[in-house]
Length: 356
Image 1 (cartoon, rainbow, N blue to C red):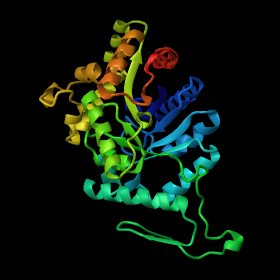
Image 2: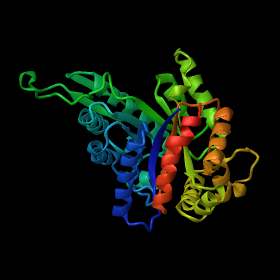
Image 3: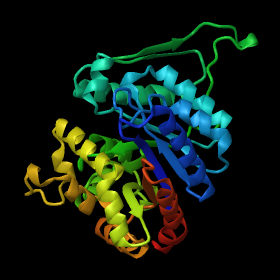
Image 4: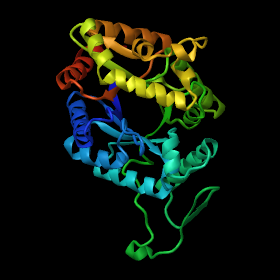
């Protein structure tokens, strides 16, 4: 199994922004040193807990500080950007990194972000997202002149002077383009189905139960089958989890239940509840919403304990879901820096090597 990270990031709102950003940079640099294979960087505009508004700028900052780790937008929220801007900025990063870029695309699910950009209803945003992905892929693979007209975007480049390179756009270093990923939350999501139809990387969120994770993979496979694609290899599947490993299980629980990890679960519980999606958190569909507490989320949706306990829990999840290719450790706030660094090291050097 490979090890990567998904960085929303998650910092308490009272934390100094600058310190949080510097911590995020240090996290990715250390992950690269420990052999993490990839890092997906989130993006939001109105969330103090997740304060990176421009993941491509963050990636540009850590590129020269790292050597091997692949860096991905996790995700580019497409209704909030013009497809041309997304296409050329990611293509530029792909050249600067000599092909270390992954391209995560998604719709976004934060109502205050929608309000800020004066976006339409979520259903329309979903259609915008699909069209934007199609436009970006065309821009990455089509030489001018071109004229792409959709329901939401009209992109054309028909003038210029080829002799002087006028009327050209930058295309990616990787051919035909960087690997594309899509984040998945709901069990039977359209994103999972579309990713399966097109062979994109499925990235399962950290805040769903094992049964919902299994639905993610089944929906992905159904999409592939409906599109006439071969049965997908589970190596392509990324599964994210909040993980905290300490010297003893008791010490791990003391830190996790009283620090920023518990605070982040309270935040995510409220955010997901406000989107009327509490069902994705439940390991039993008969659970009441009131039973989905922070304590429940820490016990059922996070991996907390000493290295043996965390290995046992990850083995259980692996068996329940049928397995995946890359475990993505969620980047949490370093409310105790030394313990979080030790957690990363133990996960990379002792736990993941013992997984299938």
